[in-house]
Length: 295
Ligand code: NDP
Image (cartoon, rainbow, N blue to C red; front, side, top):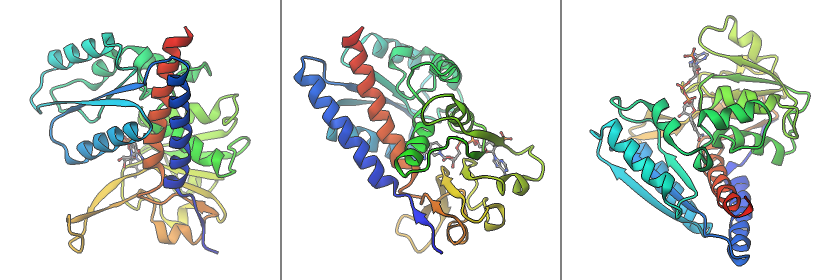
């Protein structure tokens, strides 16, 4: 039987509508208009598209957003100066630094320079540490997007075996921390796999919920998936495609057609976790603005 398609575009639209209502009521009660500062360094085409989409989604939700575009040869000190200014600028409740950054800039140092109160991407070590301890914080957008797709589609991870392939600081690791928490939306039994994992298919076949976050097109094949599993594809990869006007198409980390024939449910690429990531960014920015009036 064909898998149920978990439509991230629809779920994200619901979430964005909830955020827009939240913005309206925050402003109506005398609170600030939430503002997001997006920082883009260099000319990476995919990053520029992401930042543009995030800015547009902010405006549609009634938020203020500005993009600060710096040249590719920007030095670390200049970027730190910009972030220091944004940390102090009360028009902006959230700061997003689009990754990856050019080689001459140390990403970890830049992420740590963002004020934790404005860390709406949820990547600062303080945000991630608080999440690990189950304390309220800004959740990282992509992992939180995965969690929302599961919950809003009726797949509570509680008690389920979730296998995550990928252990980056942006996706795999924080997702594992989030889903294992003794909190609503958590309580899963989580296994994290990576390139040093032995017998990967053996482990992925044990998954009730399988999350692919590897950055390798089509790496999760049907033989790696248990009949009836829920499959979440975080990967966004460009592969050459001469039949497309732009010369490429986007694919996930999952061999979609073959896995969809076996899974109970699956997220498509595009239109799965990508739009959820943006919706969670808006939700975090609204929260950041709310916090400035409630503390
Ligand atoms: P990274 O490259 O930082 O991490 C990839 C992880 O996958 C690593 O832990 C790596 O293991 C593991 N891995 C790679 N190949 C294999 C393999 N063959 N077998 C087992 N493990 C493997 O990527 P990100 O986490 O940043 O991103 C992953 C994917 O998700 C990318 O396609 C990215 O574009 C996409 N993405 C999508 C987002 C969205 O909004 N939907 C947001 C962020 C990312 P090891 O640690 O051993 O090297």
